Length: 234
Image (cartoon, rainbow, N blue to C red; front, top):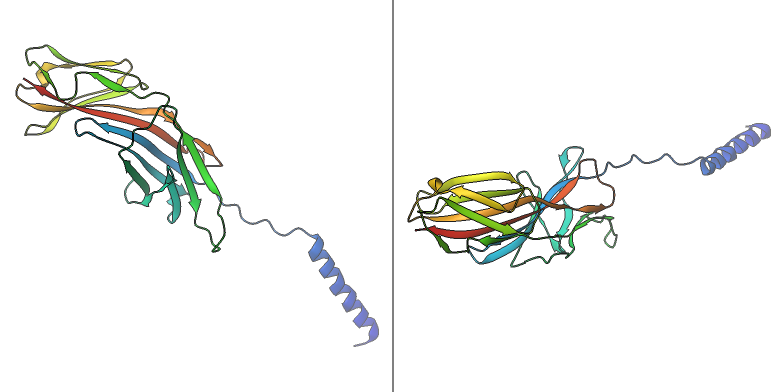
């Protein structure tokens, strides 16, 4: 090769190297944000003398469930589950305080041994908790009354009241949803003398978690509360 051609080749190579250092690298394909839907609940089973808080969450990307995430509720690791929710955990023996911060964190497993994947955090607190004030748990109600009157205080409307018979044959005998006040009247025709019943009060929208990070449109974690008492009809 003649010296002139060698010089041209060398200059071309230098130009290509120079351009590669100046031109920006191609942007990586952006990863779509996670879609998170779930519920954090407090269940107070006065009929059994136990209580617990729980998290059930669906975490997807592009409509497909995302496995292998490190999901924590109150710093405790949630398990991957089957069904409508793919992550869940129940923490027994807990009664949350009004104003206490409840936290959910979602993190991908780090690729490097000592790497740290970004954390998606969500927090919320109960601003009010309800409690059934009448009838008393394990209380007795006369079958001669026209109605079983259920009263409560606190919480957030709308409420759902459900009455289930425990005495065989067990079955749901009454339900009323969308209650805006703090009282429900159950006609005594739904109840039978000599039977035991569970009365449950539930609110499915006690608050919404705030996400500290970008999530897909429609993502939401709600707060829920349920309290259950036992009554006897004489």
